Length: 146
Image (cartoon, rainbow, N blue to C red; front, side, top):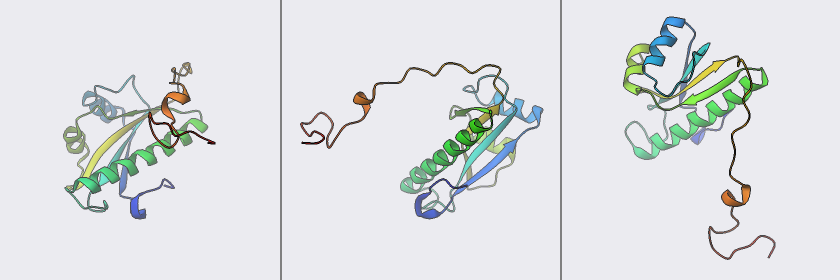
């Protein structure tokens, strides 16, 4: 709930799904969901509260960022409790909206699958910081400390 949001609109809604049959139905609409989670949080945007309003690209982009930041906070909080998570964007938004009976203007954006991991996998490799962090410009001659 403490994630930042554009204009502090907090234009997000979360549907927590714990019923195994309903989780199965969500999984059937989500080719990107690995395994069988204990719970799935369907993170939705409330387009009526988005900063640009429903159907306006700038508002929809901001609300997607807002929902994403809230999910990141949720995932970090879950990890602190020993709960693993996986964020999923590969799913049928229309199918999940219908399955959950979401009203018009509430659009599912991300799924967060939650469960207790049987094992903790090694962290995936990350690109070196010097490949992704640039000072002043990208590819230019700006330097730090100069």
